[in-house]
Length: 264
Image (cartoon, rainbow, N blue to C red):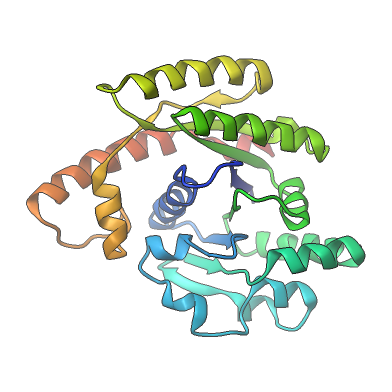
């Protein structure tokens, strides 16, 4: 089954939000989904209001699984029906160990291959900071989706992400999709940034599809403050309900454009 990574060398671009919603959407389609957080902050848990799971058990971390201290099932945290998460503890320390002990790379590959027999999709959420763990997991991915914030810093993050692939000798052909995020019809900067991104993408990743931009929506921040996923069926105020339905339609139209199986 496909392993999909979301990546960007710039924080705060909505990467964790997008992959979290994508994972939840697939889970609601009766797919078995695993999300691996390679971000020590494990911020993707907060999107679902489950940040307590980050600290409530100090044993079920991905780091310990790689070291062989726990079993495959012990590290899983169920977040929603058909949706399991894995958290990390200290990627910097683990990355040093991976560099020093090459056997750990083989162990990571073995772990991912084992999970692929149980799950329909595996999503990996990376932090903007690079690490040896990130390199290994990107190399094991079938597809990489880069999320780009539509401002000058976001464009810089996109270029830095491409440079990261080049510097670390990662296959740039893994980048299949580029998602512009934070678009606004009434603001000039996002429009200019979107056009600049299209030019950069055609130059650096000509085989990647630049997806239609996601609009900047305040309802997403409102829901995240409450720990509610956009795909949770919970009661909201009339305004938020209407706004949620608009965002859901935007997201679903994007999700239906993603064809990860073709990358295998």
